[in-house]
Length: 502
Ligand code: AMP
Image (cartoon, rainbow, N blue to C red):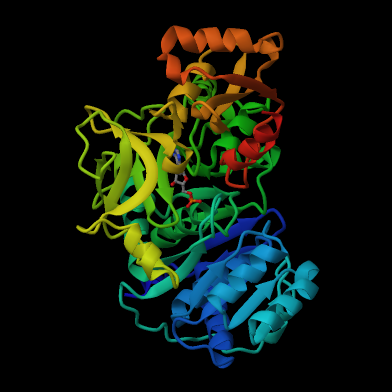
């Protein structure tokens, strides 16, 4: 079934219910969703776009951008969101690779897009700004308010998400209607999301967290979004008393905790805080619980597979873990040679289920490489499953350090360093080294109490707890770790920065 229809068959039973409200006075009911998405779907298909044709969108967050996403689902077109931070060479690559039939950009990048669309032979270019104005909304104003949603098969292409690609070429993960529908259903069931829920939506909508996890669950349950164009901790705190749910990346939670006005009382009406997209530090998890009485529910997912694991709604939410595989997801850990690893051993997480994407856009060989012969997707994340079935992530396989022939998992060392007084957080990387192949290197952010901390203390502390080959050869201090918009530490930047100093 078309995923829009899957959502709409529930939310259309309450057309006057508020779907989205914002502080700028925007208010859209579910009847508005149906009408606006119909107009956009009519407009896009009226341009001659056929099923499966791509619609590339690099715009600031607005309700209209959400309607374009949903209109693409309705019309069987493929929505292609682009991170608003992408620059010329990245945009040029995506347009050439995806060959969209339509591109929609911010007015400020119209000149750049016009040139790149010319080079990539994209026939139609429109603009849309964050208040919903631009040539796209102007041109579609007279399109018809009714549209018969196309019938889709569950493996029909719905969205292409380009992976963050910290190394190598960014790959377009092909996400299907079935992926979207099944993952939304599983999450609504797991987190008991209902029409009574009000979710503060402060995430970007070019990424699966804000686009799929937050939006699709609210659409499926018929709940309401409190729409924030960006994450401003003070604005979120002001809205908490009107909301029941917050979904965020770990930096949302550290920034909320940095606000003295963020207290237990301000969280009275919230029933669930969810974190994901990057690891939540145990310190943040504990401090959050101490301050608010709420235990953050950490979950794990990726563009290629939507949500994979989550801590339980009822039952123990274990800090430092991402919980258990969601219903329908088969998860196993592969050893170095791809064989199943015994329980408790670390290895690459492999998964199978209705959440797993259909492959990388125009990369059949890469797709084949990333699946096992029995159909499991190799996530590239290193994980371990404990006795109770909780999964912990130890970073990406490509971040694995091989020092003197030994495998070193950065996360293990980061956990030890983070536990040292005076450390706010750390990132452990491997730098090429003539003797060891790679040298374990720690990059540390000191806390206020740790301004006197020196490399010798860090090294002595790690040496007291871990095998010698895991002890950092070098320790550097920085003011902050570089992070991308989803809160992921950009270890590639650290490797570049400190490789020079070697
Ligand atoms: P993306 O496709 O941009 O969503 O990135 C997916 C990657 O983010 C995963 O493969 C993990 O490496 C990482 N990730 C997502 N959620 C978590 C989490 N809760 N803990 C640790 N890593 C995570």
